[in-house]
Length: 89
Figure 1: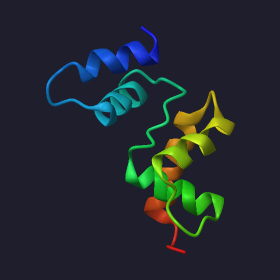
Figure 2 (figure 1 turned 135 degrees about the horizontal axis):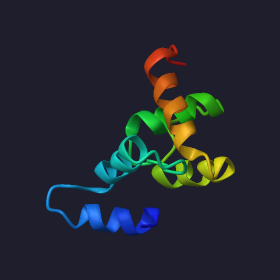
Figure 3 (figure 1 turned 135 degrees about the vertical axis):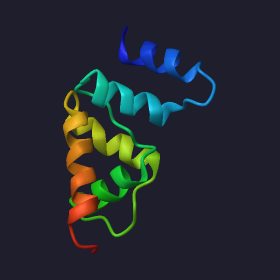
């Protein structure tokens, strides 16, 4: 299945949303180009990495992430790490 097909199949299950689908695709299937912009820690981490004053919106984060295609899963992991370990700006 493509990423989009897998997301549709997973979110068809009651109680599973896009975030759950993204986590499954990244961590269970090892998909390299998943960009979970709905994840608050990803957005905060990306904002810090990019030196933004405010946390980017989902749309802004999606636009920013285009530059890292087709390796956005790696950038999501980096953003999570940066969110968890870097001092707040």
